[in-house]
Each structure stands twice: as C-alpha cells, then as structure tokens.
Image 1 (cartoon, one colour):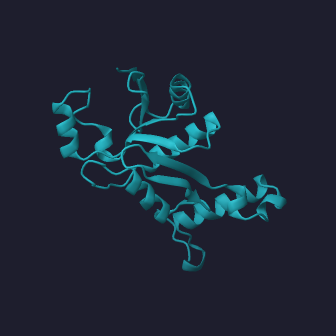
Image 2 (cartoon, rainbow, N blue to C red):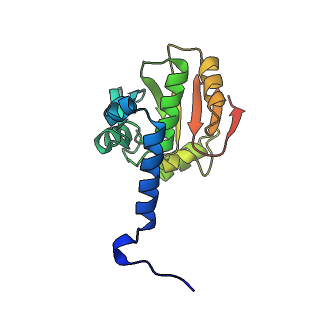
Length: 193
C-alpha cells in the first residue's frame, strides 16, 4: 500500500532532482567558483563564417552564452548558411554548430569558416542530383544537419583529420574540390572527388 505524504512535504520529481543537484554541486564546486558568474565559468562559444557564394561574413558571433543558445545569433547563422540558390532558410542543428566550435578549438582557428554549402532545400538537392556530383538523395543538408567548408589558412588534410578525431558525426573529404563535409549523422568518414 502506498503511503501519502502531507502536501507541505511532497516534492515533485523535478524539485527533488534540482535540490539533489544543487547539494552535489555545492560539495563539488569550490566556494570561489560558486561566487563567479555563469558567464565566467562557462565561456561563450563563438563562430565566424564567410559564405563563398554570397560574399557575406559573420564575425565572432556568440551563438552560445550564459549557459544557453542565443536566439538572435542562431538566426544570423541560419541566414548566412541558407540555401544560396533559393534563399530558403532553416534552423541549423545546434549539434552541428557545436561540432564546428569543437573543430575550431582543436585547430586553434580564429578565422572564418569558408562555407561551400550549408542548408540545401529539397528542390536544390534534386537539381544538384540531376547534374551529378555525388549529392545524396536524403542529404542531411536538407535538414540543416550538414555543412561543406574549408579553412584557407589550414591544410585540408589537417582539417579533415581534426574533424575525424572529434568522433561527432559524418566527415567527408573532397580534395579535388578543396572542402570537407561535416554532419550530425552517424559517426563515419569517406573520401570523394
């Protein structure tokens, strides 16, 4: 038989988890860190982009700060990574942005990522498939989960290897076209032309 607690001492599961987390955090975090602001403990994540088709730049934008994703910054990123052929915009997967941030961190890169292709509409994807070029029928570009890029200040082989070392998703290597593909799908890698 289930015992009922009086209303004044009943805690919701969320309240119980929060209070347990706070108790553990207070034991694990030195008092000097507890006094710091969240922004000092969790530094902002920045990205910079150069769209090779439109010439647009987005410099040092904090897409994640104070413990959360920043909607205005995400909107600006969605815009610069839009389908440059149709102008369509979609929400770019936050995990892809985090992958790019990790890649920049691993390479100690502070320069803009040169974007070859970000979001791709279904119509654009169909057109590209008809002209060849190895475009997947169900490309993750159509879901805002993939990007093709290069870093002019780094060897493509180094960028490719750094992306593989992240173990974060798909990594394609296209040396003839001088770009790599990153996506938030299954961890895998391949080479193309």
